[in-house]
Length: 400
Ligand SMILES: *Cc1c(COP(=O)(O)O)cnc(C)c1O
Image 1 (cartoon, rainbow, N blue to C red):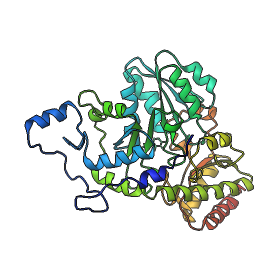
Image 2 (image 1 turned 90 degrees about the horizontal axis):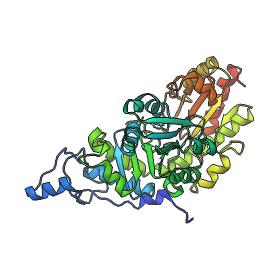
Image 3 (image 1 turned 120 degrees about the vertical axis):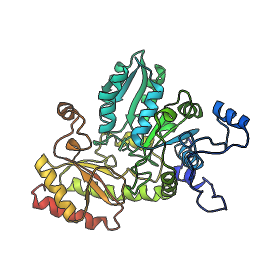
Image 4 (image 1 turned 90 degrees about the vertical axis):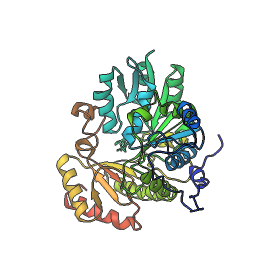
C-alpha cells in the first residue's frame, strides 16, 4: 500500500480568512441570511456546498476543521462534535436501531463502557463485550443483529492494539460497520486505510493538545456524515452535539503542530518506558518489543510519529500508586489529573478514575490492577531530568 502522511494532509489544507487572513475567520453567528425564500427551502431539502442555514447544522469554521480532519484521517468527509462522547453517541445511535447489537472491546474508555453497558440498553441496544485481541471471540460474539464492531486503536489503559484489518473483515462478513476510536493514536495509525468504516476522536486529547477544551469528531464516508446531518433523522443534528465555533478555530490552529507533538510525546515516552523496564517495573508501552501488540502496531503504523505518549506501569498496590502520584506532583514531574495529550505529563490511577466505571471483577479479568499508574508523557525538553525525579519518588516509596 502507498505510504500515507497525515501531517501533509493537514499542511495542505489551505483556507484563508475573509481578507486573506492566514487563519480562517471564526464564525460568530448562529444563523445565516438568505436573499430568497426559494434558496432557503432548497437548503432545508439538501445540503448545498457553501450554503449555511443554522450553526447546529453546519457553519464555515466547523466545516473547515471537519474538512481538515477528513483529509487527516483519509476519509471522504468528517464532522466535528462538542465532545468525544458526543461523537461516539452520534455514531452508534445513527448506526443502530432498537433491537440491534454492538460487539465491543471490553478494554475501552470508562465513559464509553458506561454508555454501552448502562445507557444503550434503555434503547434496547445490546452490547456484547469481548477481548478484542482474540479474533475467535469477536467472531463468536457476532449475530445477525450486530451492526457495529467497536474498538480503540490503542486501548485505554492497558495499551492493547486492535487488529484493524482483521476486525474489518469480520465486521464486513456480517454486514456490520467497524467503528474505531483513534484518540490515543492520531498521526500514528490511519484506521480508514486499514478497513475502518467510522473513525472517532476525542479531540480533547492529542489533537487539540492544550487541555483547554472538550471536543470530538467523526470521520467517515460522505454518505454517513450526510446522514448524521439530516434535518429529519440525523443524530448529530438532532442530539445537538455541535462544537462551538471559537473552539473549532483554536483546534484547527493546534492541529498544525500535531505532527511535532506526536513525535516528541513518542520520543519521551519511549525513553521513560525503556528506563522503567530497566528498573524492573511491569511496564506497558506498545513501542517496547516485549509488548504483546508491538508487531501488530508496527504493521499498521505511518512512519515517523512514534508510538504515542501513553505508558501504564504497575507499582504493586493502590497505596503505593496514590503516594507515588502525589509525590511526583510535588516534584513537578507533572499533574495528578485524568485526560491525556497535554504538553505537561499527566498521571492517574485508572482503576479508581478513568476506568472506575468498569466493575471490579471485570477490571481483574482484563488485568487492570489497582497499582496501575497511567502516564501521558509530556513534551519535556529534558526527559532524563523528568525520569530522575520519578525514580527519586519511586526509590523513596521502595517501589524500585
Ligand atoms: C477522553 C476519551 C473519550 C471521551 O472524550 P471526551 O472528549 O471527554 O468526551 C473517548 N475515548 C477515549 C479513548 C478517550 O480517551
